[in-house]
Amino acid sequence: MLGKTAGGLFWMYRYLERAENITRIVETGQRIALTRNQDNDDEWASVLQTASVDLGYFEKHDELAKDLVIDWMLRDRDNPSSVMSSVEGARNNARQVRTALTHEVWEAMNLCWMRLKEVLKRKVNERDLPHVLGLIRQRTALVRGATHGTLLRNDIYDFARIGTFLERADNTGRILDVKYYVLLPSASAVGSSLDNVQWETILRSVSGESGIRMVYGHSPTPRQIAAFLMLDGRMPRSLYFCAKKLQDNLGYLAHDYGSTAISHDLAVQLGKRLKETDIDEIFDGGLHEFIQDILVALGEISRQIEVDYRFYE
Image (cartoon, one colour):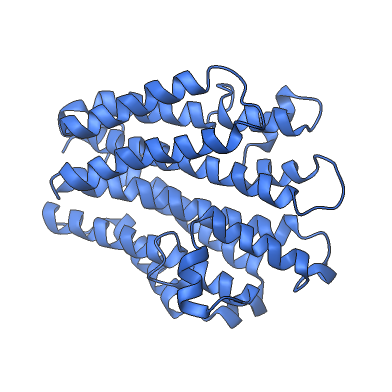
């Protein structure tokens, strides 16, 4: 496969996953803001930090306001990670690799872009926000469903999956990090009713509230929730699940191409670390520090994949 084609597939699905993840972060901010007693917009600073779009926001805006933050994250083209920018990025990459996609995948991607372009052509008011966020997830899920149902399981599918799970792991790590590093008002809140409500909100943001009850019952502790979102190999948005999928799909490429790339070795190292780490060790050493290490590792894997498979040649 040409490097540009591989890169187009990788970024198409990475942007698609990013669009969905941004909606989850916005929804998380909205839910957590409702748990606060005071009526202010400070909560939205953590939303911007989670998505790593705070610097761009404050370059454009002088004030922190909920409606401005939501607009920045959903539809502002000056924000390269906004939903609209991400969907357009996914669609542009899909157009470049059109011959590698099935008709169903291309049609689903094009309709996703057209529908969201229509919905996000004007500022979303708070009353319509749940509907719009749900529509974004629905449309991105249709592209993913067409992908799973129609793409041949070859290197095309592998690059699509690699882009998806790199972006997903990064998002889960950032949501967890901002929960304990930014959101908690003070150390005294750990274990409080406020803390528990926020953990429940975090679970909702990754569609994990039903799954964790099957594993830990109806009253999981914060430590169990963190373990579920980082180390559980059955949870499709956990760090370990994503790392394992990266390892698998990079392994399939190694088999098909007849050589093992450096990026595959890095993914194996990441998967091994997550598999062999105990949640007590993570908390003893610092949750923030652990997650930062994982985010750095994911960034290294992403950059190495671009080098290994010559995305820009």
